[in-house]
Length: 398
Ligand code: AMP
Image (cartoon, rainbow, N blue to C red; front, top):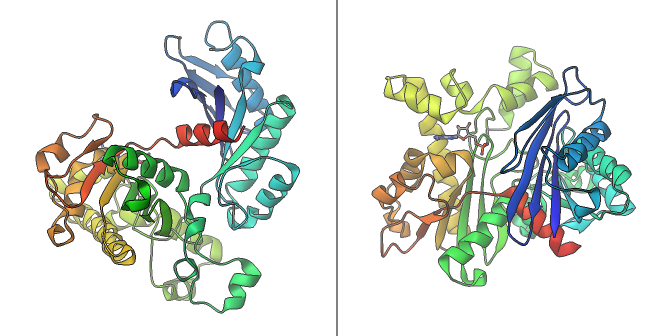
């Protein structure tokens, strides 16, 4: 079975065409600047020349047409006709409380996704446009929605409710939703295989550390708490997002700086995190280089990031009454040995014993253990693969 995975953003559309039987990526590509001058599609397929085409894409419908043309092209493509696409899996950022798993898209499902637009105003409308564009061009191909929030719907009430007046939850659906669910779910499934144990017996902390970072407590295969909240702004200090701060700072800043809601939102989302603290970069490679050269604020930014990550490791070990495995994933988690070492430092009391040699040589090895032999807690690096997870869920449903 072959699945087309679509991740539609406001002006971009990423896609992968995956053979689910071999887990092979047959082609992957990106449409950029949709609706903006200079739209462009690029596609890579193993054994084929890279395809790049600058061509007007007025909307996501045009983009999907370009994707199909690229996939079916004699020279660059990998299929001869469209009906070789058995199903389409769509990444949808917010499923609110309506979805605790992936679903085949129907009229009702689209309405529910639309209802969640105010919870994810930058993402859900784009995801819906992507879905509708595919429906138009492939009316007989089943479409599936895979939600970033679904995996976290198993959190207990005390974990997902904020201590605000209860009516705010009833009226505005204000609660913790959590994000990166597809990634946390994927690495959990892979950790189960790697550890060779039944997931129902395992307490795992999954650390998705990338430009956006989130940490999840997975007890018996279920998310019981996660660091992102009502929005992806909460939790650890991130590339440019502030993570958890005292909520009173928001109104204080609005008063003192004369900022409106848009400005204060922009500062917390785009000018904060390790970028804001260092004044230098949101990229951990830049920060590590600057620290090496004696830049104190780069060093402070890295320390703050690591400190906030460790806080969640501690909190979730307590929430689960112990921990059997730590899983590092995403850009930083998969590549940055220094961050992994610092996060695991002095955690012997929890049963975490990192093997420095294995940690330093983990890059490029794929899924691997980086703990010392005999370490009570297994420490793993597991490259995330959200597209494959979306394809697997899609195949299962259709
Ligand atoms: P992601 O959002 O998962 O794509 O992660 C992107 C982030 O991963 C970048 O901003 C970098 O901070 C970090 N990253 C990527 N490669 C490396 C590397 N080799 N060493 C350290 N950090 C890295």
